[in-house]
Image 1 (cartoon, rainbow, N blue to C red):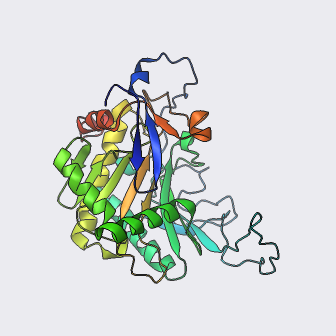
Image 2 (cartoon, helix red, strand yellow):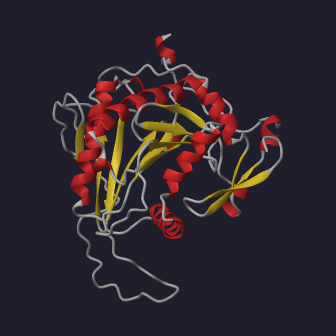
Length: 342
């Protein structure tokens, strides 16, 4: 299985991925990302996310000392809409009115840090803000998406450590697929898809990267991105609000270790997109849901060579070269001490 091409099924979204491990030996003469020396100052007078600075939207940040949340000056969603008069809604041309809110979460006042470089106490403050934002916005919206785009090649427009939270009145595509497939599994098996999956992963012990008392980081069997990972609680938890204080502290610790391992893989500030998926705020019981976080990093074989989702991936189905098991071994063997400290 680690040498021959094959397909793997993702029961969470109901899609397949093509795995081609024999392609890892192919030569690379394609694009290589330029590597920038990370010599950012602790404070940047030109950064619109640093404390006391003026933002691009004209507002001025307070002199914050920990985390800081504000409404995105260029929100993709708005709390009010003027689309009430939609008239075209045929089988082929459908429009759905959508409202929501977009916020920015500054993880730290220090411009020259990443989550991986922050201490566990500071990461815990970020975890608490995630919890607070999800709880607050969940009172008004059906879906609350917390996420972080880290690094220029993941589209981050500012190197200051920050993430975002978007809330909307409808379930987006990925959430809808996960909701549908988890519900289907629960109806057929009378058990939780990701809880059962984690139990099987513990039996096999092939894709577990790291675990602590309450959390597990693993490379999913169906992973698409080369070093994609999933972060799961060890018990059945539907939403962030159900986490205990001990679980939040434990989460902060495992995030520190996980993101440090990512950076240590290629001795670089590892780019990724990550985000949390928890039960929708739709008034339903949603026992079928299990809280989890996805990490989608693009780097393939070095700090300068990334995986491109083009051609076959865009026109047919996702494809990967190294297997999930190979990726897990590489990540598992990495040090828990950040390369910049050794």
